[in-house]
Length: 454
Ligand SMILES: *Cc1c(COP(=O)(O)O)cnc(C)c1O
Image (cartoon, rainbow, N blue to C red; front, side, top):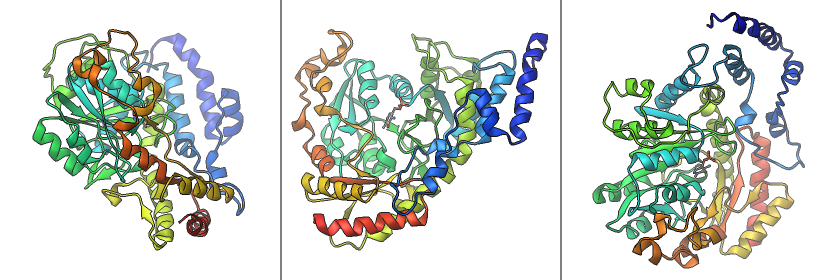
């Protein structure tokens, strides 16, 4: 606690405000704080028989007084910065420790976003100009931009019916310059990590798992992000637990952790990281960035993490019910799941004959107010204008000035399998608070529509 009398004065109204909160006058005090707290959970749980079913944003359905209390702690102590302040800040530090424990990793580093975590991971793996990094053709921008930021060359590999990196196409895209691969656990489902790890280890390629869309998922009993050399996560609103923005990186390797920790905070090694590394330093200071997480963000994530398993259980319950209800449909081709036990149940997926059938199916399901759509939340990167044009922040940026960089051709011919899969799959979203009545409606609608489109 602070000994500064000015701070003591400043704390008085905040303490009483917290008392007010505890007394149960949440709405009034939230209004006084200027906090809008839409309890989306209520709406999501109570869709009437003919109302649209919506998964909502997962994290905010679970916001309650635990997030409020944690945020107020930071306000009251006046210590929003993770390394120092009027009191000893602990929110981000504690979150890192709990997160590492939850994932079963030696080290965790909290950062400002999943994108920042990818930048740190790529730097930690010493990826740079002249290196190639294999990235799935359908994923979020950051898996591409982190490679370009490092001055390395992104090489795309197709996804397969798991909607994640095709292990065989990954093997085909390897060259003597391949330094790393980014298996992305997309749309709540794990990549088939066994063949990916086998190929990578045989060829001496580093593995950076992107679990931004699969926080808490697992593969063969190991949490996603802890199978390769380094794993990253996002806490943006569209992911699982969320603080609006935020990200993390985990690893078991001291040198990777040290380089990531240095890069995320200008270059020097802060005491807390040196201590976690047992006082051992293996790397010199180099020019870094500022991707430090604030205590406000750490406060919310600290309150969210204990709710993650509940969120996942809700999603899995809904997805299991939906899949069980449609699995006997003649010839139905569900998404390939490399480890059904580790899948989050973000949505239920099935493949139709072609794009026309898919579009008709989505249209019919939407008429029935079912949250159906194409695969979502990512980009078909190799056919995006700026990627095909190899646009960078500077014309002499090293990614595309090497002979390989000049020669590489992106565009539709580089990812035909991915484009086909994207065109044929239907996605039906699940919510962590879906009721049985809602999954029953989803099953009934798919059973009604499926014969019309096959
Ligand atoms: C969201 C996302 C990211 C980036 O996370 P941000 O926190 O939004 O920067 C990276 N990879 C994948 C697969 C994502 O879905």
